[in-house]
Length: 396
Image (cartoon, rainbow, N blue to C red; front, side, top):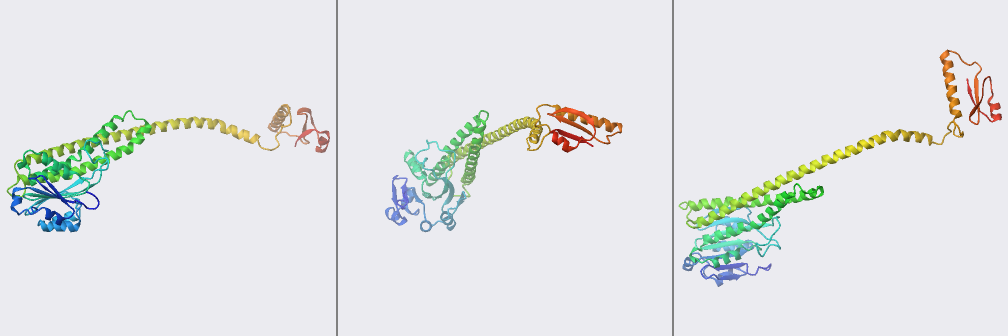
């Protein structure tokens, strides 16, 4: 089916197994006169009409021709996403959400797609006594697969409108199987890497874990709605006296098989979700341990840096002071005489102060070339010392 709308209407006869296609509903009526469920031909044959990507006008036309309830027409025209089963006077409706395969998953289920779930669209099945009418989205392959399945069926009396409905439900649910297997492979691979992954690998696996868990949750949500619809379908089939439109007998065995398959799939997905959740917790715990270890290493390095800073900061202060461009005592002297002279002078001054005495006139100590040349008592003018070229320190 292309974008131009060619062959969007198709008619399949279970008796002749012939497919007639048309681009309009009127064209299909012209080629097939057995569309009405009230004709004698329809009593001997089960037919199946599929409308792909039906517009609101086409839905209205088909519903008027087949006496379909306005509520059903509204659900189909508005693409009602809620999955449900409803019974009416001359038919029952099953509404499912089916997957729309991507470009890398269109030909066969043997391919190995990613666990990411593609988009979905509404698939509506109307089951009459001897007829089945489906409204399908473009891109799904359920119609062709069920037709091939009918052709392979040896017991042609088994094929009925209810059996076509069962086959379509089975195909829709089977479409989730490859994505479940892909999620299983990814969950097992991630679980194996919990204790062998490096720190850089763990950081890269966290987004993968989030994406996988999101895909598993989406699968569970999609299949849970189908399980509720299928359970309601089976219950109504078992109460045949109150719901004469629903099938009974051998078809319940087929529906029970689909229900068991669905329960097994949901159980497996729940198990995979637990594996991924446990792996995610382990990865986060491993990251936390790595962060704590890194914090300890940083603290140890900072302790060593603190010790070095304690040693070098005072040295830096001393070197900074002596590196300033100021006059420093003894900077032009080659020996330490000036230092010892100053020390002796300070000692003498301290002793005199301690003894309560003092020098009334003063005391001068003069140095020549840094060595103490003369030590005496008396007055020595600065001018005389300057003329003699001597350094004088006067103590008053």
